[in-house]
Image (cartoon, rainbow, N blue to C red; front, side, top):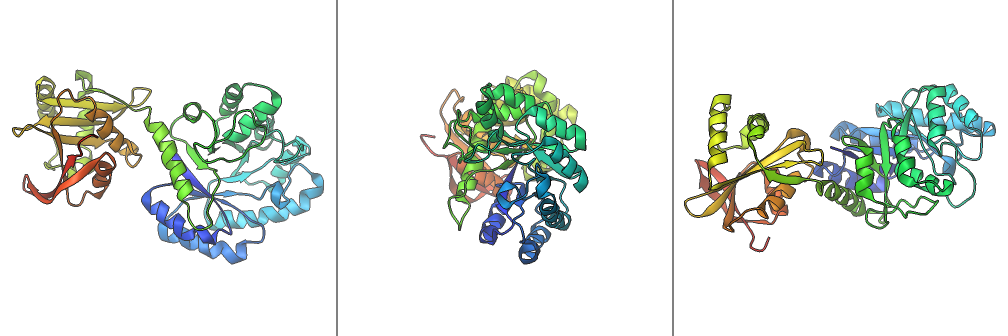
Amino acid sequence: MYKFGLKLWSTNENYLGEAIRLYKEGAYSYIELYVVPESYNNFCKMWCDLQDKYNIPFVIHAPHFGHNMNLAKSSSYERNMQLYQETKKFADLLSVEYIICHPGIDGDIKETARQLNQIDDKRIIIENKPYYAMNSRLVCNGNSPEDIEFLMKETALRFCLDVGHAFCSAKARAVDEFTFLKEFTKLQPELFHLSDGMLGSVFDEHLNIGKGNYPLKDILKTIGDNKQITVETNKNSQTNLDDFKKDVEDLKDIIRLDVIIVPIGTDDVMDIFELANDQAVRSLSFNVSEITLEIHKKWFNEKLQDKNSYFYKAVDADKKFIGYIRYDLSQENEYIISVAIKAEHRGKGFCSTLLIKSAELLPIKHEVIAYIKQNNKTSLKCFYKAGYIVDNEQYDYKGYVCFKLKLKKGI
């Protein structure tokens, strides 16, 4: 699955508390820190302490044209080297893998390559740019796959793909956006920048998700799975990051729309066996003992034949297994739920999606019940989001004190 990043400036002390809160909530996986010139002395300790306390990974973004760093101009060389030295100090302090650099504006792509080679830092990844600089008609270096490929070959550096920049450049060049984007993806980007925007615009607006008309579902498919994506959207408050949190949730919702719920079949026996024996799944189960393959196969075949058991799996658009859910009809004519998600898909919202979508497939509408161990706070959140309410906070189920939840009527 994707790792989403929070974009902040090195001077953003105002967002520090919010960054901590959202990291604890799992809203993002790393911080991309844009280096504001002459900020190191005043702010380096703040970011170092944050990383030390919460183990948050960082990506560094070097200053750009807006702060007078322009790798495309030989006349800017001395200033560029000074700015990069401060960038490097931040990168060294925070032990980063990536330092993002813009290729410059209104200059020579060969000069960009020369200066990057003078810097000689293999952590640098080169970001593609729109055709035109923001609110001007100055042309950006790195606005095409050919520019980026040239820089990669000349410097042996890697690539950061900004989707909005690619779309804006495609419009300026009067070429198809997705054809252009796919050419960039052939260069195997290490990291991505994503925001919403308006198709047909030559200027990148960094709109919040849902505020533009970018086909984000198709964009995510083109990018591919398991990528790092910095969400570069507008922040409309100086005191909170609620808009960023909503942007990430909206992107996750788009991803979850591709989840398909289908009945379990005989070919799924090993996927279910491996997940059922996952250490985390066993620890939260009401039978914590490891299951043998022989016992599992017997149980699995019986479940497939059981007319009072409804057994489903979640798969992605490529039919890859995400998790399973089972509804067993009790003697009280209530469905009892068992659900599990593969480790790499946990914390992404798939559990609540599986609960919601699978409930719609049940052929007979009985009361739906879930029993959750007291220490399983993650599952509680998942069930709440899917429309379940607490029926009993101290229910004795199979010798364990549990929460008893019911699916709210009408969900």
